[in-house]
Length: 239
Image 1 (tube, rainbow, N blue to C red):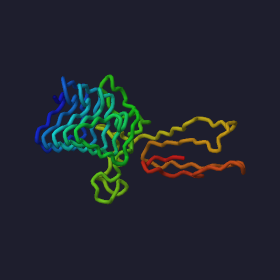
Image 2 (cartoon, rainbow, N blue to C red):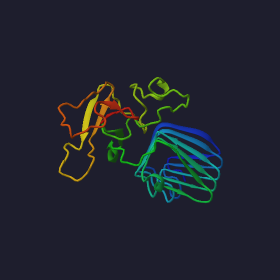
Image 3 (cartoon, one colour):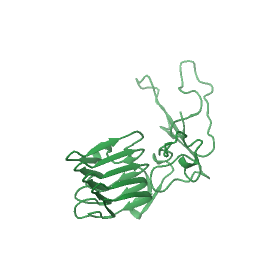
Image 4 (spheres, rainbow, N blue to C red):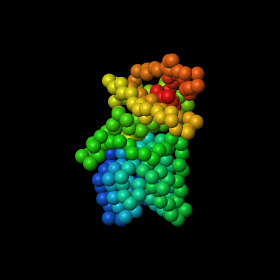
């Protein structure tokens, strides 16, 4: 039990930590928690852990596990498993297969809060042990905007920022945007021959500066929403 970490009647925190490629013969490839333990995982990265039950985390017997700003991906046979009145509380985290990646039995519960995603985190080279984020990772600027819950978000509270001053990322390794200015456009062209009433194009900007754009010389029959640059909730310029 607990290929990486074992908790028994313990109040513990796991912060900015990578737990990867561990194996348990029965429960909790990454973490095993039991007997009223309270475990808080903040900005954790779990990858490649294996067990019979709960590849990333297994919890039981009234234990509580809170997961914030974390990534759990490619753990087997599922990411999370809880039983016997244990529970998970999860927010602003990337959990492979979402709620389907969590197994509960015997009155265990999952509190699935806001900000969670289920998508490839786009690590640099996970097979080689590099769990840093690629520039186009969906986990960049996707952490809790007010992690400390004081009512002031990352725009004015350094406690809710990565070291580079940007919004908190998900995972153990933040993406340093200090000297980065990356713009991506998806798709790279639009087909106006389709029968769709609306076509979408997404502009993503990674960097600490301001990225501005506007539409010029558009025909009267073509409407853009929005018609100029702005910022989405996850602090990326978008259109």
